[in-house]
Amino acid sequence: MFIFDISNPLTLLLMLAATVLLIFLAQEVKKSVIAAVILFAYLLLLIVHVAQVATLSEEFRYMLSTLSRCVVIDFIFVFISFFSYLWVDDMETKKFGKKSFDNSLDWFWKKV
Image 1 (cartoon, helix red, strand yellow):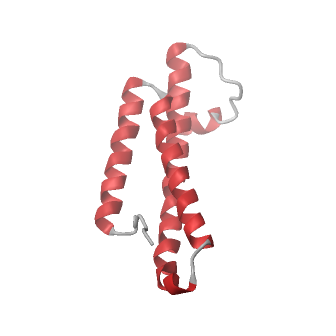
Image 2 (cartoon, rainbow, N blue to C red):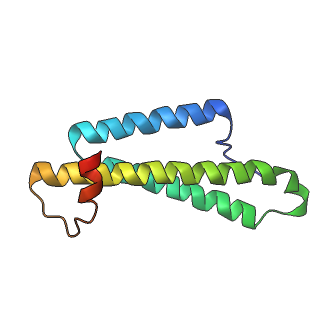
Image 3 (cartoon, rainbow, N blue to C red):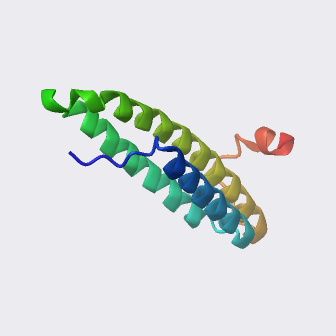
């Protein structure tokens, strides 16, 4: 069974560096699509890891702890990428004068 083990420290560090660089790129060019791609990738990775946990056979039960760590790390990266998407989207709407449908997070962005 193949597992993309993101609980490995080197892989985790590389994924974090790539995420930060892509968020910085999205912030510089003010395109929320870049942050949305990151969010979609981490959601897809989360779905894959949860599906692997759900369909884990008895012979691979020793991988349950690794998969559980991967799911927790996936949630953390989804959380980070979701808020970065909201942040870049807010910057994009202000720069291009787009009207946002819901400004319920304005209080949050003013404090950041």
